[in-house]
Length: 339
Image (cartoon, rainbow, N blue to C red; front, top):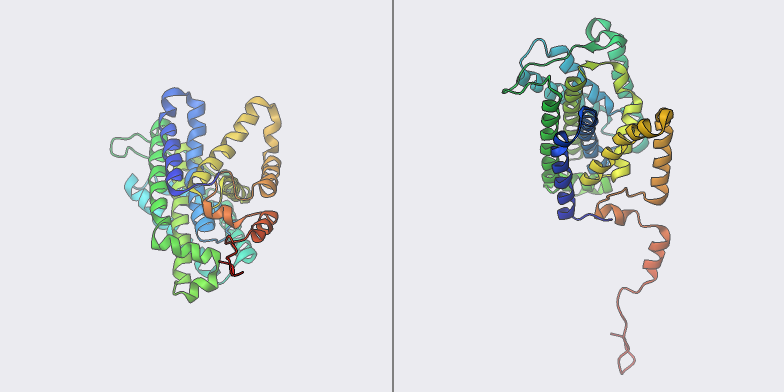
C-alpha cells in the first residue's frame, strides 16, 4: 500500500480519534498500555525526523529520552510545571546540539557508531552519578503539581495530555515535511553532495533535525516520568534505542502514518504475548529481530510506506522489466520512418 499526502493524513486522524475514545471503553490496563503507545509515538516520530526525513542513522536516541525523564525527576519538586516543561525542552535541545554538532561530518555506519557511543555515555552517567541521579536505584515519587486545573497524578489526565502532544507533533511534522526545510532534508537524505552543491546549508539542516528530534524525545521522557512516577538508567539503554528504530522500520521510514502503526504494533505485541502465550514475552527481542529480517526480505519499504519510498525500493526484477518496456509507442509511417 502506497500513501499519498491525503491518505496519510486521513489515516493519522482516524488513529488519533480512536485513541481519544479508548479511555471511555477500556479499563486501567488498556489505558496504561495506550499511554505507553503514546509515549513511544512521540519518541518514534522524533527519530523519524532524524532518520526518515534527514537520513541520519542515529542509534543512541534513548539518551534524549532519558535526559527529558531525569530533568523531570530532578526538577519537579523545585519548579512549577510550565517552568519544568520549558526546562525539559531547553535541556533536551542543548543535549541534542552537543551530541549532533561533533558528528556532522560523519555519515552512515560511522554516524551510527558515534551516536551509539553518546547514548551509552549518557546511560553510564545516569548510573554512576549517585549524588545527582541516585545511581542504579533511580528516582521515585514523581508527582508534578496541578497544571491549569489538570491533576497529572491522574493516569487518564496524563493520557490525554500525551495524546494532545502527539496530535500537535503529527500536525507539526506534516507541515514541516511539506515545507522548504522538509524538502532540504529530503535532498540531504538522497544525496548530500548534490544538496550542498544546490545551495542547501548542510550543517544547519542536520543540527535542526537533531534539535527537533531531541526535543520530542525529551517530551516523551517527561510523560514517561510523570506516568511511571519512577525513572532509572535501565529504561534508557541500547535496547530501547533499537526498539525505537524497529518501530519506524516496520511502519515505514519517513511515513508518519506508518510510524504510528509500527509503534502501535510493537508496543501491543509483548502485551499480547504476555496474555496469550505465557512466558514467551521474554523472547520479544528475538521476535523483533525475526520481524525485522522478514520486513527487509519481503517488504523493505515498511507496512505503510510513502509513495517515494516505494519507488526507491523497487526489486531488481521489476526494474529490469521496466527497463525493457519501451517508453514511447513506436508506429511505422508510410515512408518507413517511425513517429
